[in-house]
Image (cartoon, rainbow, N blue to C red; front, side):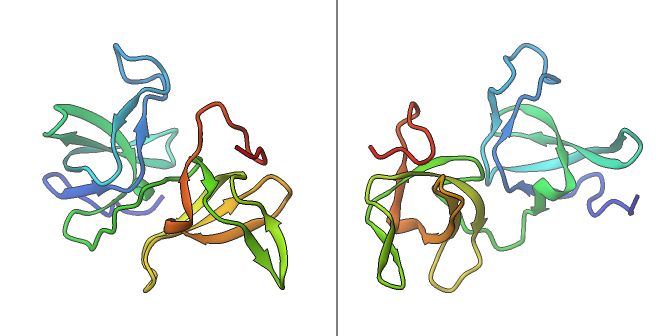
Length: 156
């Protein structure tokens, strides 16, 4: 196990939505605890299963103290580009996408965000899986949030 990247008192930003995995008391599993981009202060550093660093971070805005893995955090002073969607969000193509002239994703088709690419010169883009085994890199402006009932590959 490596040394902790953050220490007591460090201000950090969470880079993904943090949901209750069943360990946060008084809230249902899956409930959103902390929204991506929120800034908090490291309160403690511990381990889980002897091989994962867990940071106890207090988020003043929400009044919650939540356990975060190191890969979920960046220094609060680091550049941050907000995004509309996150990993596992279902999105809808607002236009058709073609590869070598062949339409591979129809306008209205639902896909699932596999990765968020924030540091690109053209703005935020996503790796989106559209259900046919194909993953495309798609700019944020070409997507909207899918209907919660829609499944990957569906057309809305």
